[in-house]
Image (cartoon, rainbow, N blue to C red):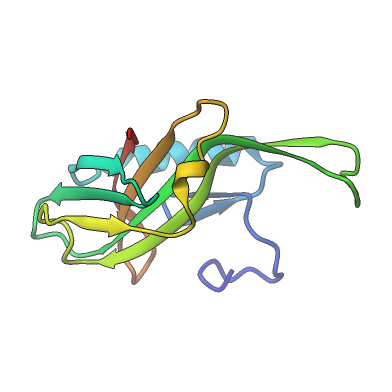
Length: 158
């Protein structure tokens, strides 16, 4: 909220490339912001050797050109999830979610050289539901303006 100087504590429904926020009732602005973000080339970045370990954590490497400054963030997400709502404005409904983040960590700016990285958190062995795989998403962002500089994604295997 502070980053976008919003007047209320409401969370933006869409944040594009870390720099633009869009309300869900404005699809034309969303399309415009995505098109604008697509014009800005991203840094090449690759995930290597990503796997879920026996203790439920994730080991992986990330490679990108070393001359880029930014903060590397890694997240493990379920492809999909749902919840049955018992109370409140959505009582009786089933809510469906996509890319539900189960754990994440900031690795800083010096983790782009292929060194082994480790992401632990809640036990991810049991996060896979209905045979849906987990995905590892890493992104590099500029901490001064939150702009996303690079992103990579990989499905996790055992």
